[in-house]
Image (spheres, rainbow, N blue to C red):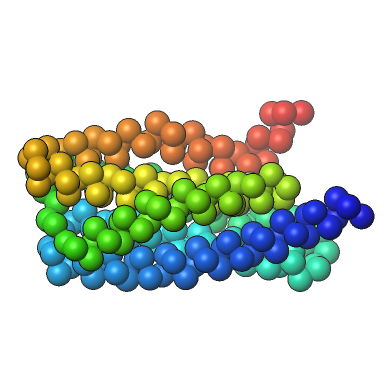
Length: 213
């Protein structure tokens, strides 16, 4: 009974966290893309599209967790978890592709970020909030044990990292002229993100469990 109550509390906490994620990412995507468009900043616009990927992930996880919170059967929950894990893994692939395309493209073309007060405010807020959100999700997932939620956490961490890269890119370009460093830092993220993506696919396909056996 105690274990069931603990899991129920973790699921409810996860639902609340994903509601926050969806609302935040919707606002972040709209504001970042708008700021990027007004300032003609490719970096801010790309950050906004990254937020769209995070938004989709949040919607998927919200559906997954509310499904279990609704008292569905164990078989139904497992089926929903597998579906959510597959979608989350695909979204991680899109996130990797986004990082590669925007970073390599920016280096090749020599795109320098333009300053934007709104863009700086959005990225700064994300840098403060996203690590806390990722930490709270991680604590909930210690009880839930969801592969889909783990992938979503990776995407939340990526959002915080890309916010830092966006701010650093604008600052370093304005002060030192080191416009290229932002793209190198973004590419370095793949050292962590690619293994997370591989693990997400293994969990979604059940290969990870088979290897453990």
